[in-house]
Length: 218
Image (cartoon, rainbow, N blue to C red; front, side, top):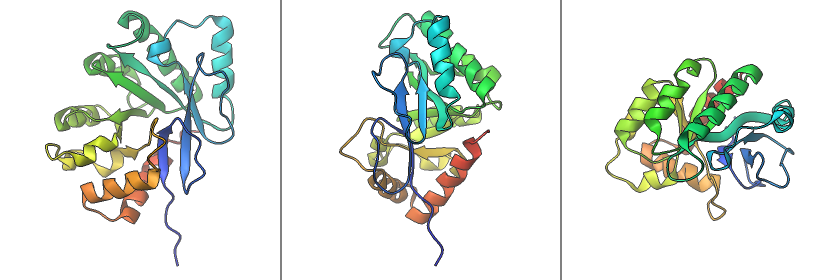
């Protein structure tokens, strides 16, 4: 009997002992310790955005060279929290440059700044994979981001909505996550998503595993 594909949790703040593959998020410059035991991402969150000095930048690059480092992030733009948007833009662009230098996908946090995000990321689209994490905006925004080359990692709140046409999310641009939620397993997220997309859980796993492989640039 063929072995089914594993669950992929593209963005989580909690180490998992369950079935599947998870990418643990580290907030560079904020977390007292960095998790590096299995796949992880690391980046300067927009809430923490200050332009790194030479020493801290070297520390970030050292983590990016770690064999378990899968992605840069979460990083991005947030109009509701953090320093001035001009500062956030500078820090985000620096990390996009690092993503290109180290061939890493980028896990993106964006709050009320999608126009600015798409403009800033335009030179990097097609060069490094760009993944919007926790996406829960409109179907129209989803279509716009996908047209510009972004992947979408969906917030589970979407699966309870009836005003969102899931057909606007092509299978090749999809990821799932648990983010900060400890009360929700990635298996439960997949089960809810499979019902929403009206496909089997195994088919959903296969699709997302294919997308995950496509992110591996090195």
